Image 1 (cartoon, rainbow, N blue to C red):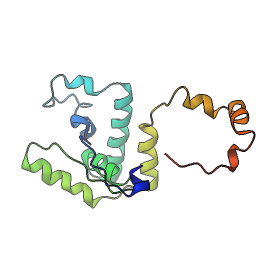
Image 2: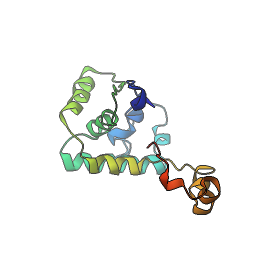
Image 3: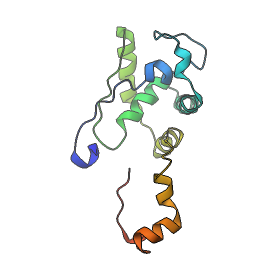
Image 4: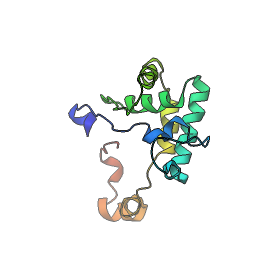
Length: 144
């Protein structure tokens, strides 16, 4: 929607309370109480992908996470919750990296949300045939 209307998005907490820095995977404590709740199976999968790409690029996972929010095809200014000046300086280094289309695809795939019912139901061939009379492939669909 932001892209369609030319809006700028300001994602809040793009580092997920520090989870996307990779520190909770290493067992480090964060400033948030019970930081272990930050890592469930889904978020662990995402963090591992962020860390892997950061290692490949030779940068911090936080840089990858922040740049990911900035490379979504629309204007995006992430709101970071830095508590120290050094954190702000480090976060600004995210502007110096560029994620490839492959990196973005990896991150988007790792973080994809299962849509469930009714979304998955309407993707079924038989349901498409009944709803669109065989013309589904002729309809221009907006990418989400």
